[in-house]
Length: 180
Image 1 (tube, rainbow, N blue to C red):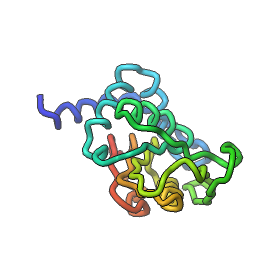
Image 2 (image 1 turned 180 degrees about the vertical axis):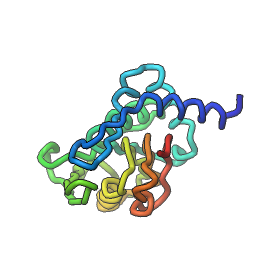
Image 3 (image 1 turned 135 degrees about the horizontal axis):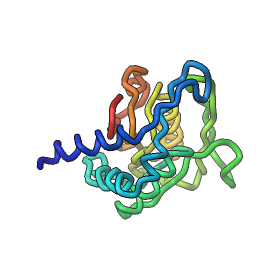
Image 4 (image 1 turned 45 degrees about the vertical axis):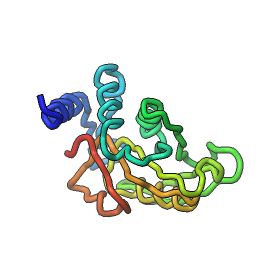
């Protein structure tokens, strides 16, 4: 079986586990719930293995996970790759001096924060999140990484919702395990 066939089979398995939740968190939004993927150990392990073998990992110094589901993906990816992990959090969750930036969601606005000492200038970052929708979250994550003097080597998401066009809002390359 070729690598492409294996990735295709894994993608189909992952898609079969993702739940579509209509009208959450607001009317008119179709929420893609990835938690069943994380609850199935074989599927979760296969996702982590797939990412760590992906070219997006080349020349990465640290993995940055976006709250909250991005944490659940970023930590095992970082561990498997022998790298550290840094969280981007919602307001009031990180101690010490922080950078903060607001961004728009498809159903409102939010804020992410990064500890000023979490990244070193010159580090190359893999940004990890669960879903790429409109791109606002990964765009603000990229801005926060830049404020620290680090650079985003690539962003990786489990699911990209292509019809929302979020990839255009994200500076730099984006890899998605599954595109819907």
